[in-house]
Image (tube, rainbow, N blue to C red; front, side, top):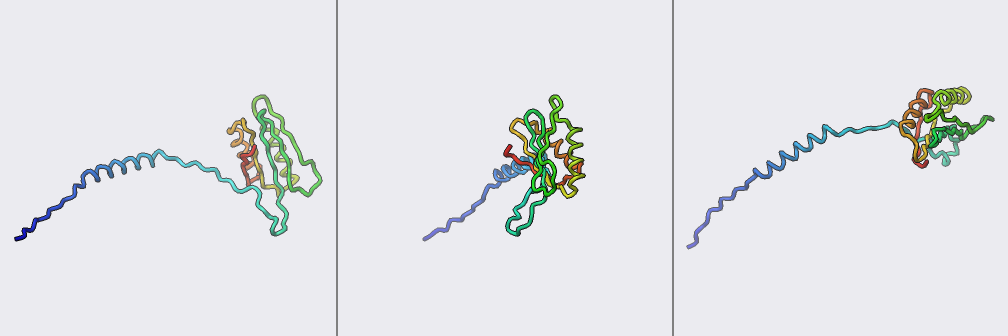
Length: 149
């Protein structure tokens, strides 16, 4: 005499639905607050050693802690000075002198498009962003940022 027990098995899914609804609300709220900021930059100088091609001329701008800027040209064939210094004006970069120097360099080297900006450790990064804008205004489009200042 065997009696068969009837198995009536129910799964309570209410706690799982509660957890899922809280997680969905949390994910939706955090997605609204999340902002992704990007800066459109390109690699400053590639490796052309395999093909034997020359690197294009490039400008390196070192932003000093005293807000002066040292400009140095690299891979330039023309006979011209390779080092320039733009002194600071008080507690800020002398933006007019920098813009004038960039215009002079661009007129002497029309194929100059690559710039690498190297800020020193205690440089104001607002000045670095403003410098990137000024480089773009002077048709220097390939801008890189070197963190090894």
